[in-house]
Length: 171
Image 1 (cartoon, rainbow, N blue to C red):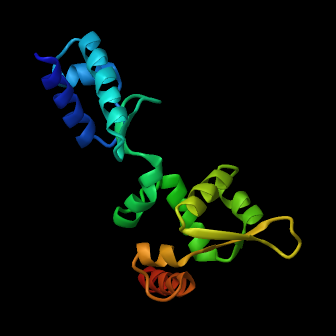
Image 2 (image 1 turned 60 degrees about the vertical axis):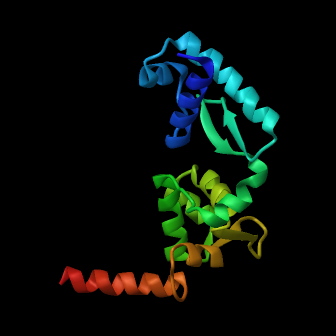
């Protein structure tokens, strides 16, 4: 197989997968020796770097085709925000109990809640402000949260609705 053809096939695989792939995985998918894959990957990385475009191949934990960090704000406006299940559970607790103190959230969701809050703030789904005592933060959902989940009204109204629905279905 010609080098350019191999690079094109690797590019196609990286484009269609949503997770980082190891050289061995690419070799299995394409039915090509791992050494040839590695050589083609290095050339492909250099190709993307020399283009000075919006895409890059990241090789931190396997290989993945991704949008460069400086363009992520544009992408996030157009594409849905992906949240891991644990982060989504933390967001659910925040939405149902807002405003909630970060220390109380940590008690409910464990110490990983701090990382979840950081990710959710970064994605613009929640905001956090120091409480009166300055010891913890008060956390609440943002307008982006409501827009993303297509909510009319606020999360408290949704929580009341869910409790009413839960009460009705339990009878």
